[in-house]
Length: 184
Image (cartoon, rainbow, N blue to C red; front, side):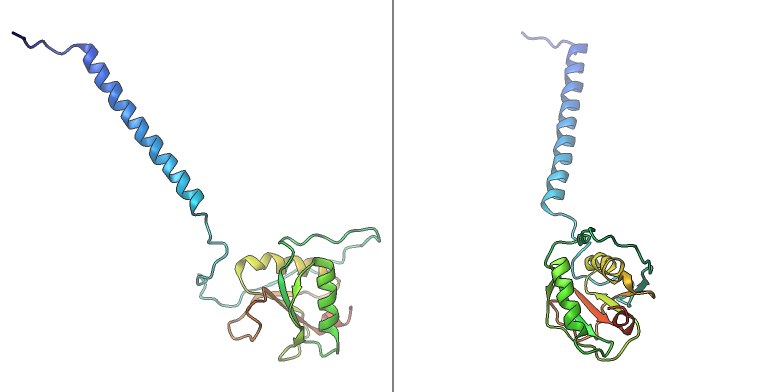
């Protein structure tokens, strides 16, 4: 009859190799699963409509007021976002037609989509660009440094306060102050 023989080194090595191969396959499957899930569900924290970590307080930054020299052959700088950013221009300077003229110039120069210009609820000495979502802040800073670079003082950039009555489709609300009216 059959007799029991002691295990050989060969069977031990085959067992270790099979276990190692199984472990390597499991690790490869886990890594590829993580990659597939990351591609299927991209990170959307840069946009979105969640609450702000600072409680939504208005954040204001000042843009530098540089007066670059322009050459007549210089092409307009491209906007950092796609054409079609929705803007609304509000006249806070009290100068008739300023919001309409500024809206026309912004649409022609940057290919924005503009809502009907309006009159701000109060007059202001300083031009302020309000952005609605965090992703729109880049566009606001671009405008402050490019289009409004003629202003000797500074342009304010701030998150649109919750109480402002600005059309919900507007990504940027530009309140034109008397500082811009003097150089326009």
